[in-house]
Image 1: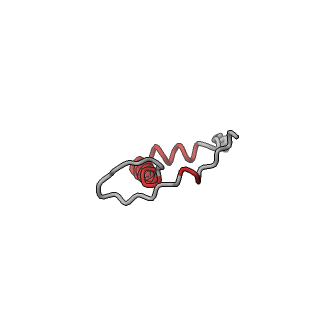
Image 2 (image 1 turned 180 degrees about the horizontal axis):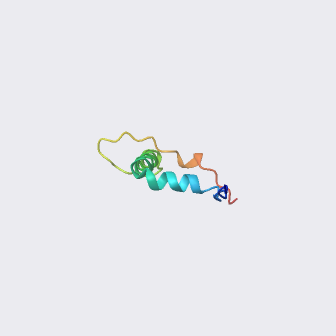
Image 3 (image 1 turned 120 degrees about the vertical axis):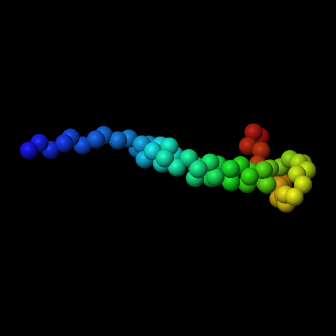
Length: 65
């Protein structure tokens, strides 16, 4: 009786398989992250019905100097 050779898989094969098989979950997580980014964006956006908590501009360090 022959034993089958083990299938070689990469480190990224499991996350890639998950994203391909669970597209709705991946879409919902991406939408949630995008929504959270809009809530804390440091721009003066007037979005009705959305309570915003923008990050103050001086809270972002200027690494260039």
